[in-house]
Image (cartoon, rainbow, N blue to C red; front, side, top):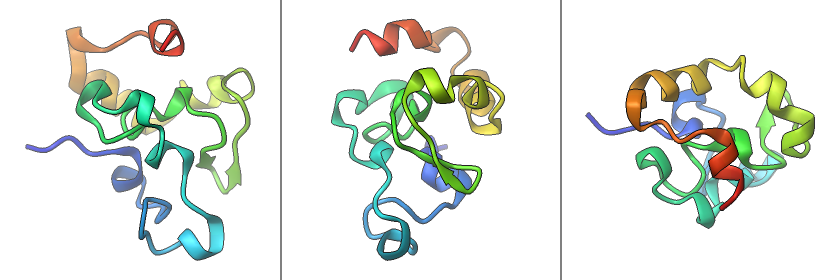
Amino acid sequence: MSKKNCWEYKACGRESSGAKVNELGICPSATAKKYHGVHGGTHGGRACWVVAGTYCNGKTQGTFAHKHIDCFKCDFYEYVKKAEKGQFILTANLLKK
């Protein structure tokens, strides 16, 4: 079973060459190289909650400080947390990268 990145799970179309790139641009999670490999994801695809400027709930999100409460309620965040179980990297540790 391959691990889904946020853009695959949410089908937002903002990954490189995604269906909505011309309209909405490439999501910063799809290019966040410092998070590449975190939770087995591509770039920030499995750590999107710490990447500023992601597009969620129909709008561009701001910094972690502005978006974290919504992210911690997100079904994708819960999906990753459950899938990673004991290997889940705490957000505070991700922010130190």
